[in-house]
Length: 156
Image (cartoon, rainbow, N blue to C red; front, side, top):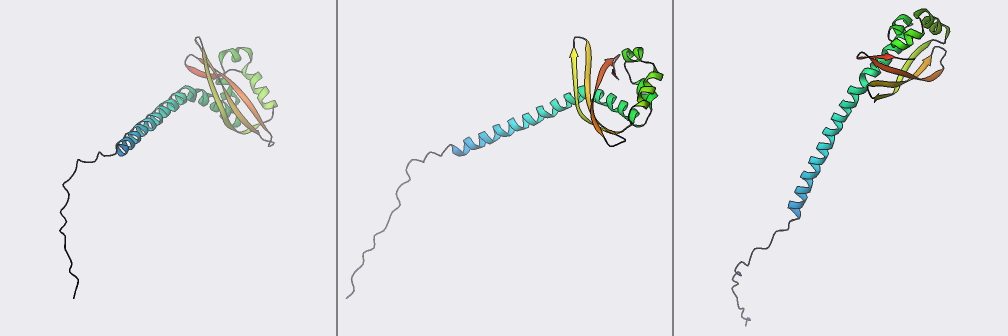
């Protein structure tokens, strides 16, 4: 004989109260949005800070590189024209040319740094150039600049 089996029907339990959802997902989404906004804001602020610094130092850098370009090209009259009025009052163009031709010739340069300052109404700066001479020697030159009548001028 076979043992009898009893089949019990299972009825599903009625649904209980809904389980509260974990707030972790919402918190992570909010944190990600805040981080994205902060990083984006920092990037935008950095961009505008860079542009502001470039706008302040760019013209001074351009004046110093134009002066250095003239020295490399041996256009000493052009270099003299880029000097400030105080330097031109102390040194004639002929004296300047004689001093430049007597010294070692500059064959190349690179800009190592730019610093611009304003004290009261005087705007000045220094552009640091790394010079390469025709004989291969190298030196560093701080080119002082002064803003005169809206133009940057080398003021030795």
